[in-house]
Length: 415
Ligand SMILES: *Cc1c(COP(=O)(O)O)cnc(C)c1O
Image 1 (cartoon, rainbow, N blue to C red):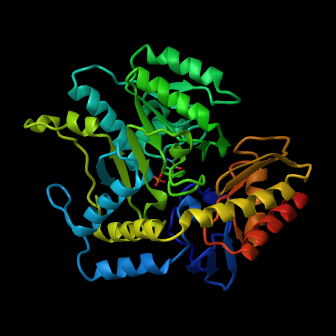
Image 2: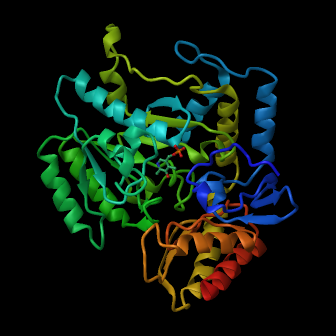
């Protein structure tokens, strides 16, 4: 067999790990080219919400493919984009009046940061510092890396990353976080960016909704823009459509991607309040929002997103999520009796725990060992170091969910 020329993301090719080839997928199940049936326990890296190849979303893409494939979006529009924007205005908080399209979670974050800086520049007030949370992850482009946790992932690029101020992760009542936020707000930063309720890639670290609400309140009091990166938490992952709902808050800027198309094709939006849009509104072309990418609001991707929004509006998605969350809670509780399972926790459809490991850290060799064991057990699970988590598509059957937890229990016992 000739080696593939593909350079995979987050993959150390030098380790020679097998790279399974997936031929087709349906619901929560992947079928490999060599005939294996794999349970997708992490929604193909947190994107698939209603299930793979959802008939309604696939049909919407196919129908759109017969009409309009791609069109410049600077100064032009099309019905699928208008449908998505209308749908988002119905589903998302009223205060978020404007919808800016892009094509990935990282890009939606770059756009959010540029909107925040643009807001301050256009209101002739010099604010540019960004506040971030410890353990944050906001994507892999340079701006998104700058507002994310520093570590082995981005050490080589650190000379390019801009300075931010980091709040300690909110443990317990979050007093240290809120205190530091209040102190930093006195220096008039531009914005705070957070992953609401749970820092995902930073280790599925969960914090209290009341702290999220307090962070929002402190930012408002100091006119610091509040950016919610709901790229992972949005679309029901934490049990509500948005994680921010659980804190009863509305951000100034909201980033959505991953589940926006049900996880079928790439698309992102950054939603903003009227004040942020208005700061860019002028006869002066120098004040426009200077951002675009070639495939902004691609019609095929928008058709998928419009279908996803229709599913949310017409089907009992939140009931499915509540049922999945309950089933997971039960299975996690059983697993938590294992003496090597530490800090079992959950938020909506996400469960996570640490496996006791002497060496610790992302580069501990437990991670790769777990990965290959899970692969051998026909499970798509991808631990973050010694943190194992599940985040299945909402349509997963009780039987397949049980397979995931049986596989995890087996692996924990023998790893
Ligand atoms: C995945 C993720 C991103 C990056 O999204 P991409 O589509 O991979 O660029 C940004 N923020 C959060 C919270 C994420 O989980």
